[in-house]
Image (cartoon, rainbow, N blue to C red; front, side, top):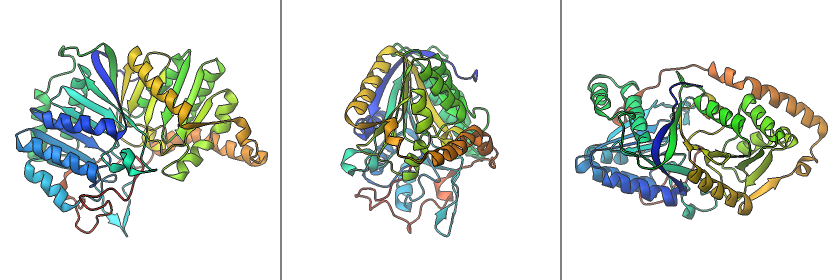
Length: 427
């Protein structure tokens, strides 16, 4: 277990479900910022949600707040020049993580993406989760609106998150005055251990994944919690194809009598997601794991709870991209009240919006094919973390938006400025 990860007490943590709860809280927090607002996101679309974020950031920047926005070059490729220039002219610093050029209309910069979703306001209030800034996170988007979660945090843990986002910008490839400016802000920012005033009673841990020193921290937290569980484990995860060791821990937990439940996609935004997860069903059901497919609309959440105190909410899926390649961030919580609230939400999903997968549902599969498939799945799970880790580890860049080809008048696939998104992405 990485020694950099440690529990910090005295925090208040609120659960936010879907865009209806998340977006108003974030936009109001940006509007109320006094000194600084930092936003990191994988996806920002130029739709009604993206325009609300745009307006909140511009309003804050015009009254002197230091506003910084970082988007991912793969996840947010089609923001218009007008959108970017509206931000920068108001004083918002806009940067793109590892921008890439298209080849024959296709984005090739697929791997090692900045997949985090973090907001920090004045070093005192933070949001971490899986919700992107796009209209497909609110119910009026229709049948493909996503089910997702985030947390709002206050207390000493925010100092650690604040330090992290400033450091990631200062060390992210910015040169010259930009790097120096952020390093000065980093030195001036309060440290997490400077006895910030308690805001609640929850213990929290901020856990990240990168391609340098923290390559498997989030997975380690999951595995340690699964090993320690004695009563219940509930994992709701959009893209579920974890490594062999995590699957083994889940099977062991179920066999020692723990109530292990997985909530996975039944109506996926990408069919391959359900196909990959279903290849594990035999292994899991045979060990006593209960599997529920969420069928109301696409599940995009990345949350889990163990027993009656441990919980986590964040950006990390349990799949090869999140566990072995992408930059991710989760908050791990040790608090009975939060755990119980998350359990109530998960139980409601299982009771009213899920179909439980039974062994009989899989009995019709040809047994010979099942054996062959199980053999290959076993070895894929066993070796993919090491194989993916050998992919080229290029040094990612943070580039000012004006210097990239992100902003383009030619590509506007996500609708006009007043309309909704017409295209969604997995995240």
